[in-house]
Length: 114
Image: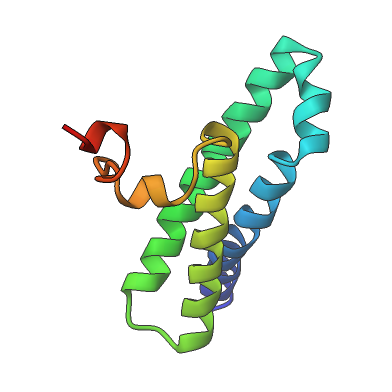
Protein backbone atom coordinates (compact mmCIF):
# COMPACT_ATOMS: atom_id res chain seq x y z
CA UNK A 1 0.00 0.00 0.00
CA UNK A 2 2.86 2.36 0.75
CA UNK A 3 4.31 2.02 -2.75
CA UNK A 4 0.90 2.76 -4.29
CA UNK A 5 0.65 5.95 -2.25
CA UNK A 6 4.14 6.97 -3.34
CA UNK A 7 3.23 6.31 -6.98
CA UNK A 8 0.10 8.49 -6.71
CA UNK A 9 2.09 11.30 -5.08
CA UNK A 10 4.67 11.13 -7.88
CA UNK A 11 1.96 11.19 -10.56
CA UNK A 12 0.16 14.11 -8.91
CA UNK A 13 3.48 15.92 -8.65
CA UNK A 14 4.11 15.42 -12.35
CA UNK A 15 0.59 16.53 -13.25
CA UNK A 16 0.58 19.62 -11.06
CA UNK A 17 4.21 20.80 -10.92
CA UNK A 18 5.08 20.37 -14.59
CA UNK A 19 2.99 23.43 -15.50
CA UNK A 20 4.75 25.94 -13.21
CA UNK A 21 8.15 24.49 -14.14
CA UNK A 22 7.28 24.95 -17.81
CA UNK A 23 6.18 28.53 -17.17
CA UNK A 24 9.46 29.26 -15.39
CA UNK A 25 11.44 27.84 -18.30
CA UNK A 26 9.47 29.96 -20.79
CA UNK A 27 9.89 33.20 -18.85
CA UNK A 28 11.64 36.11 -20.52
CA UNK A 29 14.60 35.81 -18.15
CA UNK A 30 15.23 32.14 -18.98
CA UNK A 31 14.56 32.76 -22.67
CA UNK A 32 17.05 35.64 -22.92
CA UNK A 33 19.70 33.82 -20.88
CA UNK A 34 19.54 30.68 -23.03
CA UNK A 35 19.51 32.69 -26.27
CA UNK A 36 23.21 33.46 -25.75
CA UNK A 37 24.22 29.79 -25.99
CA UNK A 38 22.84 27.62 -28.80
CA UNK A 39 23.25 24.34 -26.89
CA UNK A 40 21.44 25.73 -23.85
CA UNK A 41 18.67 27.06 -26.12
CA UNK A 42 18.09 23.59 -27.61
CA UNK A 43 18.29 21.82 -24.24
CA UNK A 44 15.78 24.27 -22.73
CA UNK A 45 13.34 23.66 -25.56
CA UNK A 46 13.74 19.89 -25.24
CA UNK A 47 13.15 20.02 -21.49
CA UNK A 48 10.03 22.15 -21.97
CA UNK A 49 8.59 19.72 -24.52
CA UNK A 50 9.35 16.63 -22.41
CA UNK A 51 7.96 18.15 -19.22
CA UNK A 52 4.85 19.48 -20.95
CA UNK A 53 4.06 16.23 -22.75
CA UNK A 54 4.52 14.21 -19.55
CA UNK A 55 2.39 16.66 -17.58
CA UNK A 56 -0.38 16.75 -20.18
CA UNK A 57 -0.57 12.98 -20.49
CA UNK A 58 -0.64 12.38 -16.72
CA UNK A 59 -3.14 15.23 -16.26
CA UNK A 60 -5.44 13.73 -18.87
CA UNK A 61 -5.26 10.41 -17.06
CA UNK A 62 -6.47 12.10 -13.86
CA UNK A 63 -9.09 14.24 -15.64
CA UNK A 64 -10.70 11.35 -17.52
CA UNK A 65 -10.82 8.85 -14.63
CA UNK A 66 -13.38 8.75 -11.85
CA UNK A 67 -11.55 10.34 -8.93
CA UNK A 68 -12.50 13.01 -6.36
CA UNK A 69 -12.85 16.59 -7.53
CA UNK A 70 -9.74 18.01 -5.80
CA UNK A 71 -7.13 15.94 -7.68
CA UNK A 72 -9.16 16.42 -10.84
CA UNK A 73 -9.01 20.22 -10.45
CA UNK A 74 -5.29 20.06 -9.71
CA UNK A 75 -4.77 18.01 -12.87
CA UNK A 76 -6.90 20.47 -14.85
CA UNK A 77 -4.76 23.36 -13.60
CA UNK A 78 -1.60 21.46 -14.57
CA UNK A 79 -3.02 20.73 -18.02
CA UNK A 80 -3.88 24.41 -18.57
CA UNK A 81 -0.46 25.62 -17.39
CA UNK A 82 1.30 23.13 -19.67
CA UNK A 83 -0.77 24.32 -22.62
CA UNK A 84 0.13 27.94 -21.80
CA UNK A 85 3.81 27.02 -21.47
CA UNK A 86 3.83 25.31 -24.88
CA UNK A 87 2.05 28.28 -26.46
CA UNK A 88 4.50 30.71 -24.85
CA UNK A 89 7.47 28.76 -26.13
CA UNK A 90 6.48 27.99 -29.71
CA UNK A 91 3.68 30.45 -30.60
CA UNK A 92 4.52 33.52 -28.53
CA UNK A 93 3.29 36.04 -31.11
CA UNK A 94 0.15 34.18 -32.17
CA UNK A 95 -3.03 35.29 -30.32
CA UNK A 96 -5.20 32.73 -28.49
CA UNK A 97 -8.37 33.18 -30.62
CA UNK A 98 -6.50 32.07 -33.73
CA UNK A 99 -5.97 28.65 -32.10
CA UNK A 100 -9.71 28.14 -31.75
CA UNK A 101 -10.63 29.40 -35.23
CA UNK A 102 -7.71 28.45 -37.49
CA UNK A 103 -9.50 29.02 -40.80
CA UNK A 104 -11.43 32.09 -39.69
CA UNK A 105 -11.05 35.17 -41.80
CA UNK A 106 -12.73 38.47 -41.00
CA UNK A 107 -15.59 38.98 -43.51
CA UNK A 108 -15.18 42.75 -43.12
CA UNK A 109 -11.47 42.70 -43.87
CA UNK A 110 -9.74 43.03 -47.23
CA UNK A 111 -10.07 39.32 -48.00
CA UNK A 112 -13.85 39.39 -47.42
CA UNK A 113 -14.52 42.23 -49.83
CA UNK A 114 -14.93 40.99 -53.32
